[in-house]
Image (cartoon, rainbow, N blue to C red; front, side):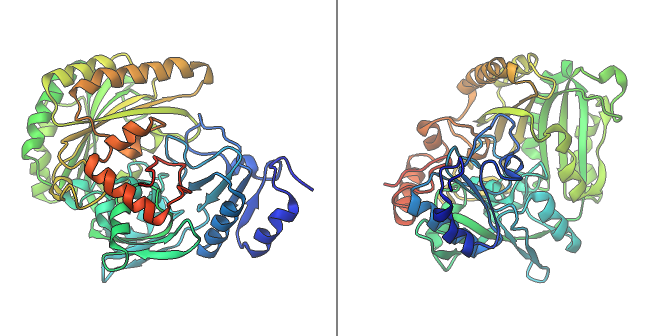
Length: 464
């Protein structure tokens, strides 16, 4: 018997007998749920979804895919906007059942399996009052965020997520499991710190943790009419901001939420997202000027558990909406860049679409450009146009607006790219994420660990 997956039962039987997790084919119960990911635009039908329960399952799945020359996608959290967690007609190695998190409070480290999300990770580490730089949406997987770099609220004080990666267990293209650390395969660890999923399936990550429990966090909300003076003020403010303070400027449409008065619902707004790990008088002093500027129409900043801040933006990124992103690094917020951003943000065609301006620097900039595969250390800002809409009939118009907004912003950018914010943008844009020197090193590393480019459904780095 053969299902519409094209994989005969007798061919699947050896894998089934060795596999502890779940194997799901088209037409079987749970298939459509298992192939659903965060971005509702992605509608791919894999021939087989292998939901692994451990490292041995991952090894069996890799060997099965290699033997049958199946295109192979790796799913961690399934939150990547490009939809690389799925493939058409191939095998998905799904880590979403691998949820173990082990915290060593004394050593301030944690080891987490590849299917863990940031909400799940924070839940375990916050028991001990510890954290590491994580994503801004709790459903984001730790795997994709870490392997692409890792922008988050704690980055200016503690570095990117990848800067806090101490070691990783990796299933390679030839079905072996290896450890990458400062002492074992250090070049591979370097490549995992920003090089994406190009070198294998990372089944567990070991992170450095930091004492973080309560933070000063939230949003300061202004009418969009004040955006120009607000962005120019923030540009000057962040130059002397302490590393304990990370901010993000957000252009948005006022949601029908209880924290906004009715007259602000549906109106264009600009907000300052705030995270300050210093909850004492120093933290209040650090954000005082932000609170006094304007003053804001709504002040939602106050002491809160770090995990609460991490979940604060979840309603703005609901699963299943259609999504298309474009992004650019900025060396600075010049007056021309500010005017371009304001002009494009004023025409956002969906009430769910947002412009994010992440303030970098601090610990991010103090890591050497050659120390990790993530090389974009000198940029002060990362701008991400996060377009979201529900209706497939709007796809062409929404995508066209997002692309044209990015094209307008590009002359003000550094030319670099952040792989975690990228869709399917082509080889040139992937190279721009690393620069020529890092690209050459990554390509050589790819030849060592994946010479046949088996792991290619990603922001791909081809073997040298």
